[in-house]
Length: 394
Image (cartoon, rainbow, N blue to C red; front, top):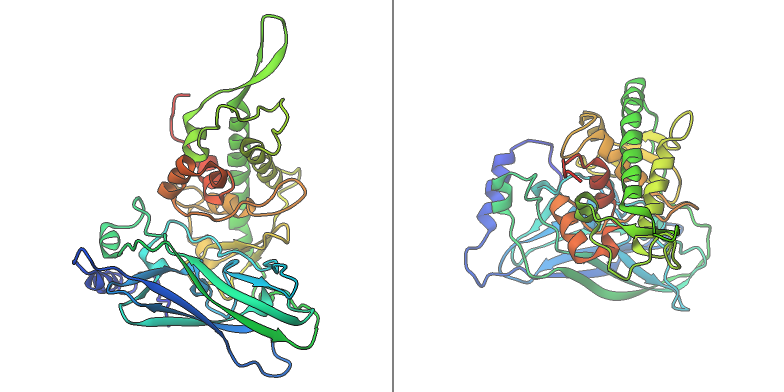
C-alpha cells in the first residue's frame, strides 16, 4: 500500500527518505516509463494499461502522485496523462476529472523509486477516454518530474529528504491497441458515497459566503488595474495601472499588450484572465446562493486530496474528508481557498477552466515571472490572487 495514514511515523518516513539521498555530486536518478496493455476479458473495459516507472540512475527519484497514476487509489486517472490517437490521427479528448486539491506540496505527495528499482500501476483508460467507435489506437504516457515540496509549507526535514533531479519530464514508449467491437461510452464510474451529511452541508454553507466575498474582492481589484483616463480633448481611454498584487500572481503585461478598449483584448492574457475571474465570481455570488452542486466523498482519491471538481460537468464539486478539517480561512490552505480553486476549473460559456500547471505559492510566483500565459491560466495563481491580503500599499 503506497498511501499511509496521516502523521503516522512521519519522522520515520522522513528519515527513510533522507537515507536514500546520495551525497555524491555525480549521483542522479533517471526515470524510464514503460507502458503495456494488460489482458482484457471479453466484454470488459476497452483498454487497460500498466504503467511502470524504472529508475535507471544511481539516486532515488520522487514521482509526484497527482502527476502520475498514483494520484488515484483505484484504476482511474488523476488527469490527462496519455496522448491517444485514433486511426485518422485525431487525439481522443480526456473526459475525466483533474487530480483534485492537494494543497501545498509535501513529501507525502510523492512515491519514491530507489536506484535500480521500479513501481507500477494499472489503469483503466476506458473511463476517461472514449474508445466507443472501435478501431486501432496509438497510446503514449507522459508526466512532469519537476515538482518538489513547497519551501514555505514543508518542514525542513522534508525538504532535506527530497532529492531533486535534472530530469523534468518523462515520456513512455508508444503502444498500439485494437478495440474490435464498437460500444457505448460508459464514462467515469460514479461515486457511491456522494450524499453530504447535515454537518458537512453546514460547513460548506458556512464557507460559501467567504469564497464569494474573496472572489468579489479579487474581481474588483482587477478592474482597478486598467484605469479609464480622460485626455485634454475629452476623449476616454484605458491605461495599465501597475499593481504589485496583480503582477505577483499574473506577471506584467508586455508594453504592446492590448487594452480593454482595443482590438484583441478578449484574446489577450489579461482579457482571458478578467473573463475567468468574472466567471469565478459569478459562480459564487448568484442571488440565492452559488451555482455549485456539492457532493461529499471522494472514492478513488488519496486521503491527501481535499476536493475535486468535475470541470466539464458544471458545477459539481466533490468535497473530501480532509476539506472539512480545514479552517474557513488560513494563510496557507482553507476551505475558502479550496472552493475558489475548484470553481476556477469549470468550463462554461463564460470562461475556459483554469489548469494545474504548477502547485504552491513559490512555484506560482515563479510562473508569473517566467510564463505569463500559463500563470493567468493556472488555478493556484487565481486562488492565491483572490486570497492575497498582503498590504502592498497600492
